[in-house]
Amino acid sequence: SSTSQQEFDYLFKLLLIGDSGVGKSTLLLSFTSDAFEELSPTIGVDFKVKHVTLGGKKLKLAIWDTAGQERFRTLTSSYYRGAQGIIMVYDVTRRDTFTNLSDIWAKEIDLYSTNQDCVKMLVGNKVDKESERVVSKKEGIDFAREYGCLFIECSAKTRVNVEQCFEELVLKILETPSLLAEGSSGVKKNIFKQNPPQDGASTSSCCSW
Ligand code: GDP
Image 1 (cartoon, rainbow, N blue to C red):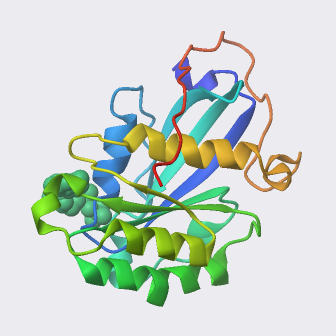
Image 2 (cartoon, rainbow, N blue to C red):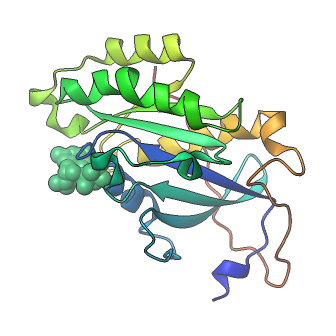
């Protein structure tokens, strides 16, 4: 396909983590479904690719989903290896999915993440179910401050703040020199030059807290 050979300045590996059912797959589809998709072979984890232009750079985003493996706690170091960005998702209507981020997921990130400066984004999903909300926005903000994450609340269903979530994360990665260094794991520069770039430019709005 022509898309797989598009020119790009950086390739970023982004991860989705969090409990089963919080909306990781829906979030990924919501962000990528209007674009051409390259499907990975079905070897446990699954990822989708999206080309975007942000911060004046042409980017190829490979966004990895757990494909349900989080249920068995079998995510391994290879899932985390070389990631420039990690999206930590909880469901604002289920408190256990929020507490598990600090009790389980944050520890796993510390254990396996190979890029010390890896950018983390805390995402409270399903804000369309406002009447069922049990985790307040302030709790999300406090968690993000404590763990040094970006923070956004979104709805993968209605697509509110979905683009912003990925854009904020990517812009922060672009501001982190160690994640852009030539030879930094996962980053390849200008590999494909055969085809003109597709204009997927979009602007970013600021994180909402
Ligand atoms: P995963 O296990 O984390 O990948 O979660 P899924 O993406 O499979 O979503 C689990 C369930 O939550 C599915 O029934 C989705 O349709 C639903 N869901 C995902 N995101 C949202 C959202 O933003 N709002 C609502 N109301 N439902 C959602």
